[in-house]
Amino acid sequence: MTILIAYDGSDDAKAAIAFAGELLKGESAVVLTVWERAAMASARASVGLMMAIDQLGTEDAAIEGAMRELAEHGADLARRAGLEATPRCDPDSVAVWSTIVDVADEIDARLIVTGTRGFGGVRSLLLGSTSDRVLHNAGRPVLVVPAPDDAAPDAAPDAEPGADEAT
Image (cartoon, rainbow, N blue to C red; front, side, top):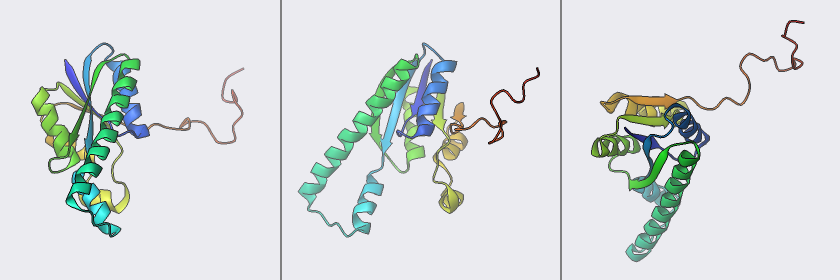
């Protein structure tokens, strides 16, 4: 079985890798980092950066290199979690979610694993999160791993350790 793990370096993506490693130890995985060319162009334009075409090529190569390093970092985390992982870095085709679905189709992934990190707030309501779009468009099983919880949900903030244990 080959699984596809979407990785953007966030804590949510790291949690998804850790959970996939626990659940699917020894399986083959492709750790995919998708970089957004359109977002980079928009960011440059929004701050008034107009660059010559030859500079854009250099900048894109630098960004792609950084994204490849990020994918390698994710693959390394996956290997440490017990998966047989290889990194992959692709520019977005239309949107990040679409590229994830396309790569899953290309490699015939049996499962897509992603964290829950999305846009958040109003932007999420308007555009939908990446994990939500993958889930509804993949046509294959998708495992969406919730964000890591920093605090134990049942512990009261001021409770003494062991206070709820019977003596």
